Image (tube, rainbow, N blue to C red):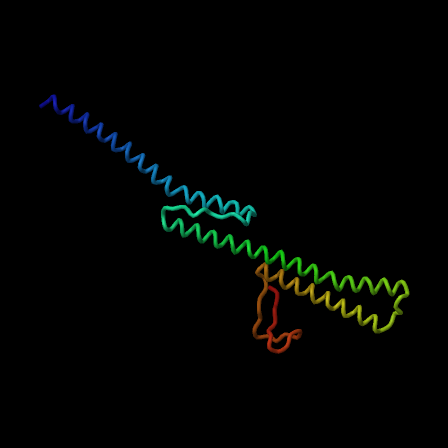
Length: 173
């Protein structure tokens, strides 16, 4: 009897150590399985935050919630990329729209200086019309910039003096 007690204690200790080692190994493997997709989404988020709008998170197998997170992240990144493309196109369009009246004004002024056209009220009216167009385009650009920055407020109660009565005023916050 006394001889069996130390053997039993040693066996229990060995089983306990083996069980602890197996538990630690399983915990490590499970944590890697969970952490790998989270790290992938985190890495994609870091790339997106640094300006890489093409960054996407891989949708790895495993937990449903993490796959849903990766899908949501990828949808968000796609929307940001589309908005950036639209912004770049808008800037290009605005630059084109601004060049035309500037070119007309410059050509008319050069022609007036060279004596090709006499300085008449018609010429002044043409230059004034082109200047008004430029003023409107710059105002629209300012409105777009404010809207992009989230500082554009709509005032549905006030009538616009610039737009017809079916439109409402835009105010700047």
